[in-house]
Length: 265
Ligand code: BEZ
Image 1 (tube, rainbow, N blue to C red):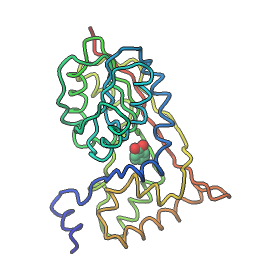
Image 2: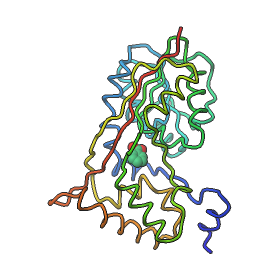
Image 3: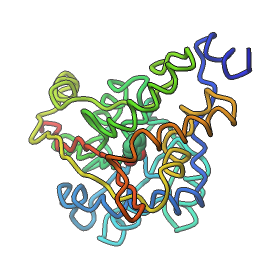
Image 4: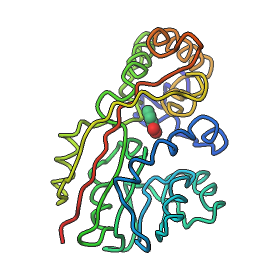
């Protein structure tokens, strides 16, 4: 039994997302580039105090600051926070499931492509956001939802099962349906203004293997490196007919859950 498989048996996670900022910039710059509709839904006003929850390397945090907001970024990844600080941003290492912020401090909490990583306790995330918001404050976010990257996910799951491994145990992603997430928001006290799924086929900047290295790192870490390479090749073979075009360009079957919710006055 390998270390990784021992970790699986003990129920702990064998690997974490490394979020290497250089690789992220190469493989995932599109995440922030495609985040502008969420900024528009936020409709930030000059001088507003905004929390960017899961700010990553700070690309959108910087946009919010350039729009005149007083913005603080938090992220669980120390290397990403270092990259955000290098942009001159106020950014702190903090797990979104254990937010430790002053109460009633922010006009808005914004989050792009981060909440689906906080899969252990989504309600704790929402409670932390509620606590940090001023009465009348808004929570505006986008995350993976519903059948996000469904073809890719199912191909990874099948490759795990072929190896007699339970894929669900290490799937690092939380992609809720709108009804489920609405209930979580309402249970915390939010008024949900809008919540919907958005199909967004997303062109990848390189090979599917590079995308898997970046976004499924902690999932593939359940395997020995050579097995992880084999799984990546199997997944690519399986989904290529649907997700790779004649020129070799890859597209991922993204589905986003976008919402705006208000903390009542
Ligand atoms: C993302 O962070 O945007 C993401 C993560 C996993 C699957 C798809 C997208």
